[in-house]
Length: 302
Ligand SMILES: [Zn+2]
Image (cartoon, rainbow, N blue to C red; front, side):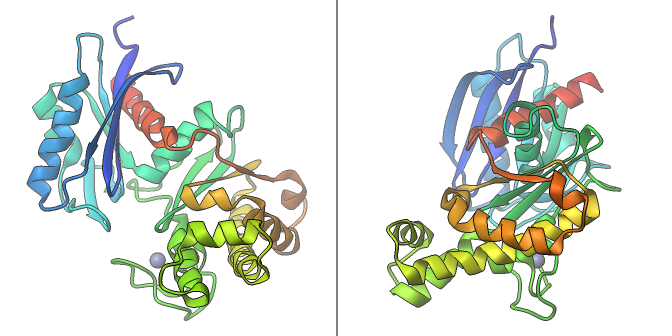
């Protein structure tokens, strides 16, 4: 009875989304505040304030989904691209300040957990999720549970190599030709600007393509085929039942997913390719919040 509600906190580059969530994934109350980007101290205080604002006696724990690489041994946020969070023991600091069990995870892992429990992945035991946004985030559910790797740094699926020695990756990544470089919303924006001028962006690209513009359709097809190469690799490695595609750029829908499925059918091996389905995420921005809450429940139950 006591441990039936937690606070989930989804930290994004522009806003902090926090909510009280029960074990059925119902968001009882939620609140948004801007993400401070000037310093880590300010950001940590704001994350704490987001919890304090929603907290009541029925809240048993807190889960944070952060856009960072994570070391689960110490609950440490190791590095981040879009927010000032680096080398900080987030779990220990927050559980000390709040006096509650705290769980932390990468935001894309949290979104995958949310979609698996309450969204497009309900009922599956083997699921891959890709979040197409500024970069490409990844999450894995294997054998009926979230997979986090040896120390919690899995599953950076956006950094699989699609093109050997290809274009440099983003942020602190030193790699080249990674899926995130070649098929993210950022890449869509860059290709839109190259084709349609400096005011164009990924949204405009998708709108033009859905209105039938052949150049826009060709760009999205190319991005989709690259995405398909990435999905095929993941299908060959993990044999998932389902691949869930989320994030803002997933709004391109079949303009990107149809060519992705074509390449998947060519590159993935039988029988995995006949089994797998590629679908869009269902929970939208709530996936990260609900998933963070589930990470909080994991901490409470531990
Ligand atoms: Zn990379």
